[in-house]
Picture 1 (tube, rainbow, N blue to C red):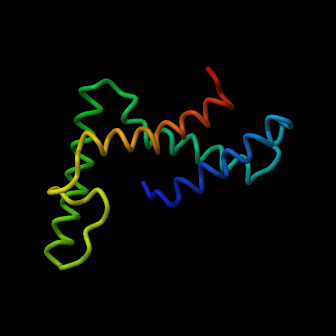
Picture 2 (spheres, one colour):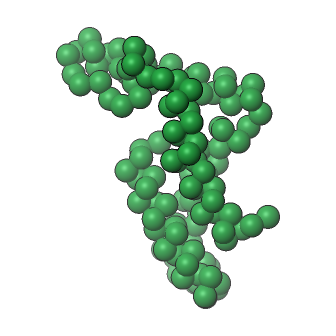
Picture 3 (tube, rainbow, N blue to C red):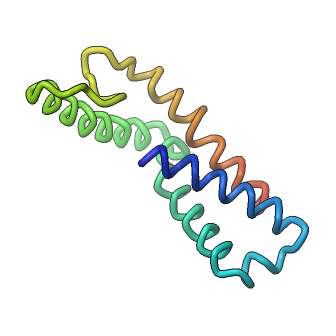
Length: 118
């Protein structure tokens, strides 16, 4: 997940959600708004791992972290700065997962639930 795109997408979605609260038909009448809604629903599915059962969520979190750590290992080998969340030596795994949930996943799900509360 590209966090720069994530926060821009969340901002765009929130803006359109406020607009569509007053004009619900706009979700379907304006192509840009429809596209943002589609992208948000897809992105929500992409970030759904923490909403799964503990066994599945843990397995997938470990897979993601393995990929991040491999990237960090390669960056270290090449003498490059190690990207955030990619340093297997310094990353606090439980803390990283809590931060991901609190600052990325939960705000996205909260925003989507405002337009689809059920």
